[in-house]
Image (cartoon, rainbow, N blue to C red; front, top):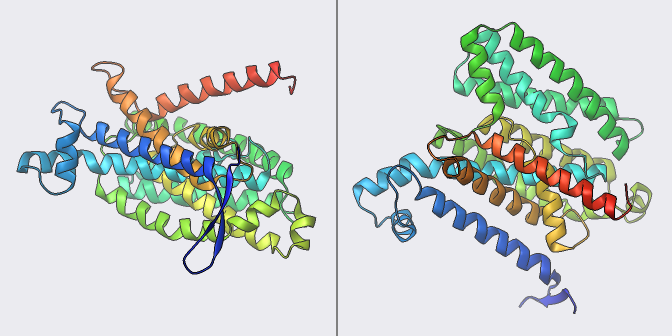
Length: 345
């Protein structure tokens, strides 16, 4: 059965559509939105899904509007945006490095953002907004360092991953040192932040992240054709007219900004950037970076993990980073077993 079809627009433009990838993307988007509605209705004051939708449309009573719009909706939106940013950022890094391990978790961007946040917490006892800015700055500095150290007549996949692993080890040691220099109050605050959590997130975290995604997503999609060609190798891409280093630099900067801003908003939520692109590719069975599918997969994963963290353990609520870490570890073990059985490792 054909999965690619040519779709002709009324203006005469012909576009090739991967039917399976499109269907998977729509399904993942539906899962993310459904999980969001369920999560908004979950809590000490449960609200039926129909009432949640009615309230979101402006037809709820005063009590429901306060609970939905002021208390729960911002947290869910932050979860969706953080998951989407991590999924898209992970897909970009894996496509650029042409390596499934080339994700922000492995390259050290999360650790770099953590270093920036810990510096603000430990050395300056900064506010929540200052910690977020520190995390964003730390992620950007780490991304710049990885790019510069990996440069040698261009940035290539294995060198990027190896440099990232080395930088990650250095920054992890710096983070450990910062924790040893902190007092008990700052250390407890730092450990909670380092776990990755959506607790207490409000509209102050939603708007900056939404604005950044609104700017970066069109920029990434505009360069997606060049990224897909780059998977065939730099020489072939140059021959096809792709400005390889320009495209790579723009997309790496976008991926760093997406990852750093997501970490600034929710802390270093682990494994979403690593697993979301791989799961999206397995579902779509489509070559290429699968950027939109990875974005939707990341959003669906994080919102679903947040529901699990709140409801699966009774009265004990876990930070969402703990749940994603467990799920990501299970996925990696399953992947290793299947790859070994297939004789690829």
